[in-house]
Image 1 (cartoon, rainbow, N blue to C red):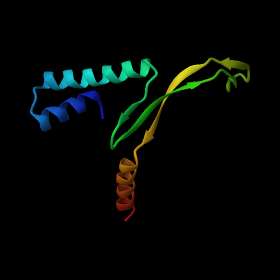
Image 2: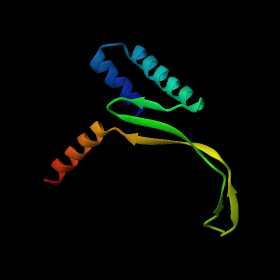
Image 3: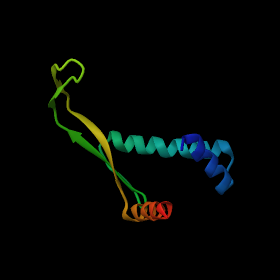
Image 4: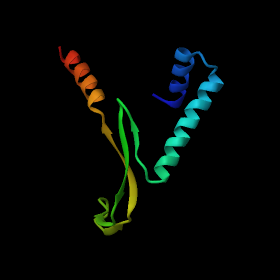
Length: 98
């Protein structure tokens, strides 16, 4: 699913114009990005939680050349699915296997 798909879905289900739907999607993503840059988590009830996690510097190896190198510290975003969504996905998997 893309941003354009989200805009189309809002357009169809809510009845807003495509421009208004696009503005809502852009505001939503801008707010989420701003929250991540501040180092905060984003929790969407019934969906899951996005956490900003700090990774420390560590030694790595270039797989092509075998040379050792230092991987710099950085922030990464991780996702933990909610139990509700996890159960819904598991139900779909059970139906698909039948």
